[in-house]
Length: 497
View 1 (cartoon, rainbow, N blue to C red):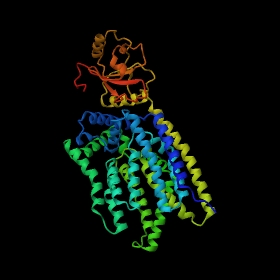
View 2 (view 1 turned 120 degrees about the horizontal axis):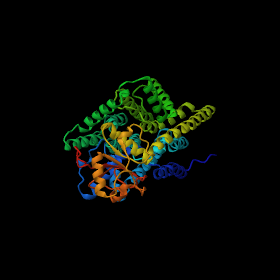
View 3 (view 1 turned 60 degrees about the vertical axis):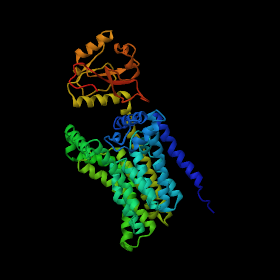
C-alpha cells in the first residue's frame, strides 16, 4: 500500500527549492538597466519622507502605481538598505507565488504530486527566479493576483477583494479584477456582496485622488500617453507592426509564458468548452467553476498584454511581462494534464517525459537570455545607458569622461572631454569646467590620480553645491565605484536642481 505524501515534507521541499535561489540571487545579481533604478529612486524618496514626517498620499504619485514601492519604503525606514530590501521583498513574493501555485493546483486536482510538480516548474524556472531577485513590480503583482484567485476559488471573498485591491494598486492591468471578481462570486453563490464590489474599487479611486491632489485627476494616463509618444518618436520602428517585430515579440511571449503552459491552457480551454457544450451553462459544479475562474484569469492577463502591444500602448513585450500569465496558467496546465491522461498510464508517462524535455530546452534558452540581460547590469553599462538617454534629449551636452571601458556608442567623441588638462586647485577646476561647458562628469572614486579627487563629495558619492549625483539616485548598496554627476554650471540656462 502506498503511503500518502507527507504535507510537511512537501512544503519544506518546495519552500527550500523556491526560496534559496531567489534570496541568494537577490544578494548576488545587480539590478539591470531599466525601470528598477527608477523604482529604487521612489523607494528611497518615500523612505526619507516617512522618516522626516513629510509623507502624505500626495507623495505617492509616480509613473507607476505605488504598492510595491510603498511596502519597500516602509521596511526601509527600519532597514536602511533600499536596494536589498526591494530585492528581498521581491524574492519573498516569488517564493510565495510557488506556494500559491501548489495550493491552487491542489484545489483544482486534489493531487499532491501534480501540485508539487507544477509548483516546482515555477520554483525552478530561470526567468521566474531571476526576476524574483530584482527590484521590479512584476513578481509582487503576480503574488497579489494569485492570492486573489486562490481566495476566490476557496470562497474567501473578503480576502479575495482585499488582494484584488492590492493588485490594482500595484499595476493598472489588475483593474480588470473589479468586474471579474463579482462575476466569479455570482457564478458561485448566485449573488454579489457589496464588499466584493466596493473593496477592489479602492485602488483606482485612491489613485485618481492622488493624481487629483497633484493637479490632474488623469495625470497618470496623460503621462503614460506622453511616454508612448516620446518613445514612438525616438523609435519610428515602433509605429509599424512589421513581420519582424511581430515575430520577435511573439517569440518573447511564447518563451516567457512557457510552451508547456500555453499548450496546457489552450487544450484546457477546449476541454472546458466541450464540458459546457455537453452539460449546459447552468450545470456548473463548484470544481468546474474553480477551473473556469483560473482559465478566465489566465486568458484575461495574456489578452490584455497582447492587446496593449497590438494597439501601440506597449512598445515591446519583454520577458518579465509574460510571467503573470506563466504563473496563472500553470494550474490550468496541470489540470489539463490530469484530464488528458486520466486512466491512461502509458500516455501519462510519455507526456510527462515530453514536458520534461521541453522544460529542459526552455531552461537552456532562458539562461542564455538571462546572461544577456546580466551583461547590461554592470555599473559602467548602467552609467552608459543613462548618458545615452541624456544625449538623446540634449545633443549639445558635453561630458567629462576618462574611463575607456565605459561602453558609450551613440555619443560623438567631440562631446567627450578628458580631465587630464584640468588644473590642480579646486577653484581653478570649477572655472575650467564652466569654461569648457561641461554638463556631466563620469567619476570613478577608486582612481586616486584624477584631478577631481580633490573634491570630497565626489569621493563619497554625495551631492553638493557644484555636483549633483545623477546616477545612481542614491549610493546605498550601489554595486559599482563609478558615478555620474551633473555639473552645476554658473552659466547654465536651466537650473541644476
